[in-house]
Image 1 (cartoon, rainbow, N blue to C red):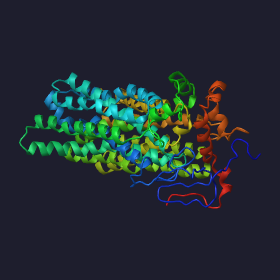
Image 2: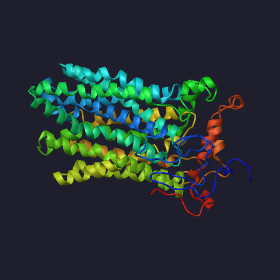
Image 3: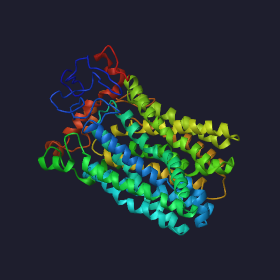
Image 4: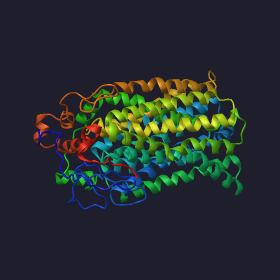
Length: 521
């Protein structure tokens, strides 16, 4: 019936243009009165993603976000490619190295949980800027480590900075329309994660340069850590001064004006932890992002020891694993968006299952490889599958809850770190398993832990195997997070706008509005 929930086609002409990395869908309402550099929807979220633009606030936020996350990835994994030198300097055992790897990803389990709430209640700008600057002293501290215990402790503290991932994904979800959120989230996080590969090149290069300038090997690696430390300081200042929480301004200012309702932490947390989909994605992300973090910690040493390579050569090969994020994670987000255009949310779920299972299969094969060319090939395909699955995961998470998006993003991010820590404890911290055997078992765990995606069902969109519930619409799903008193205060209005903009997740059921489907060109 015309005018009923789910039927509005306000702002549709059927002639909306499609540009590079953009969506101008006939089912996405527009706000032609808004004054932004990019066309926006009714929430003032950008409908187009111009990768090489610095349009304020949408694209400026994108670049600040991914570069901040990239910086934190570089510092968190800066020690990994230098382990052969550091272990000789500090007399580290295999257990010490394994424990440090676990520690580096364990700290951000707690910080990512906290960051989700900070984003929901204070805004992503403060969360990102303060965390990256507060973690700078811990990066500098690595230069003064003198024992195995100190090495493990400092890597644990540096790892807290990885919570900038949560602010990154939350920020993108507040700035870009749901039709392109997969590719935007995938690109921002993928380019940030690329720091895990870049550090495999950067740190050995800095080490070599410093050593050639006259430093001893045991001094050179320590001096090298000053570079990522200063990057933390610089990026923190840039985010604080140039960043913006929402398209219309900073959260605190908008709350003072009454333009944005002030929510309660208890309510935000409640709707996150009581939604079963949250916990499934905690597990799924634990075995996509989690295994990527685990691999970042062991892959250089694996090639160095297994194939008797030089440190620089092993680091270069290992770097390709992380550097694949340049394209792999954005591809996962793009694939999620592309499948949603035809099959809706069900297409996103199938895409996630296929990509993550593919990554698990080639992780298993990597552990069984006996030749260097074969191992490198399997590693690259494994990295593409795992990283693309990360992008596909955050193509779905923004739809789980509008009210608790920050907390759910934080929980999923923490799940990635928990999965990494658990995997490293099980397979890479003792002499029980070789690194190759550990990779084999990790591949099996990836495939097994991906199966619960089949249980994710949205009443308005369906699941992998089941259709949507009869008569279910987006407004009903997102309104259910508010009681009558909160609705009377208008707290649900943002969720209603989001529901209107998320009708694209129905897939072909709304395709009749245009004869030409939107596409990326």
